[in-house]
Length: 426
Image (cartoon, rainbow, N blue to C red; front, side, top):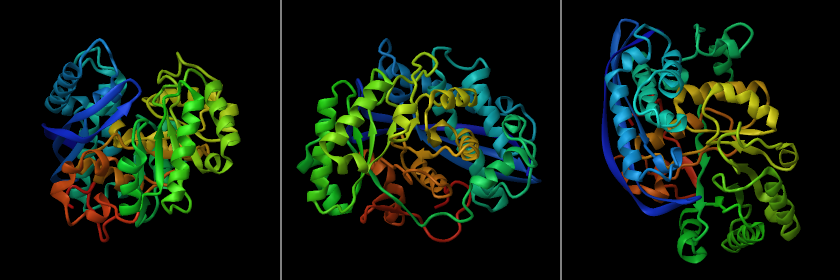
C-alpha cells in the first residue's frame, strides 16, 4: 500500500464561537477552519481526500507579542506553503500513508525551513494536521477502507521503526493498539469555564442533553478557589440527577509547580472525598516546555494520572516525559493523525494511558477525531467541543449525524455501517 502525492490545496473558513472559550490568559471567540484537499496515487489508483482542523493559534501559539490576527495570518500562510510543497515535504517518493504523515510531521514541525521561523512546533503541527488527515482519507478511499484499517500488512516506516523492536516494527505496533471494531458510542465531555454560571450555562446541557462528564478549567493560582469550584460543580451535578459524574481538571499550564497540583489534590480530598474520587486525570498543569519546566510528577501520578498535552510535540520528548513521571499522554488529531497514532502505540507498549482531547475541532475535524478515538482504548473516550462552542460548523452533517454531533443522552454515537477514510464521505 504505497502512496505518492500528486497535488494539494487548502481552503479557509471563519468559524465564530457561540460561547467564548477561556484558556489561561486568553479568550477564544473565533477560529479559522483549514480544509486540506489532497490527490494521490496509491497502488495504481488515484483518489482525493479531505482533512480539516481549526487553526487555534491562541492555544497552539500563545505569544503576547503578536495579535491573534497576526498569528492566524502566519498559520494560514504556512498552510498555503504546505499545500504548494506537499510532495517535496513528503520527499516526493511512494511510501505507506503513515510514513508520509510522519515525514510531513518532521519536515514541517522540526526540519524543513518552511514558513515564518517564529511559528513554534505545536502551531506547525496544527497547520500540518489537515494534510495528514487528507492523506489518510485519500488512501482509505483508494483502498475502500477505514483509515484505521490500513495496517493489516507490515511495511517499513523509517521515520519510526527505531522506536519499536520486534517483527513488524511500527505497523505491527500500531496494529496492536487499534481496536478491531469501533466503539458504538463515547461519553460526551462538557467544558466548565471558571466564570460559567451553573444554572444558566451548565444545567441545560445536563438536564437536556444528559451530559455527565465535565472538564474543569481552573486557574491553578489559588487552590482554595479551585477546590471550592470543583466541589461546587460536582455537587451541582449530583443535584441535577447525575448519578456518577466524571471529572477531569485542566489549568492550561496555569500551575506553578507539581507541588501545587499535589496540594490541590490533597485539599480536594479533604473537602469532598467523593469529588476527589470522581477526578479521573489532570491535563498539562504546568508550562508546555517540559525541558524548561521540569518537575517530578511521581507523587501526583501516585494519586491521579497527569497527562502531557501542549508539551507533547515530538517523539524525542517521550522519554523525558516518562523520566519526569508524567503518567499519561493527551492525543489530538490536530497534532497529526500519524504522530498521534504512533504515540498511542508507543504508550501502549509501556502501559501508559492516553486521552483523546479536541481543540474544538470543527465539522469534518470533529468526525475524524471521533472515529480516531472510537478505535483506541482511552482514559476518557473522546472530548468533542464543537457542539458547545462551534455548533454552526456541524450544520452540513445535520440531521443525519445528530447522534454524533448533537448528543442527547450524554454520549456521542458513532454512525453504523462501513466508513471509508477518515469519514469525509459521511
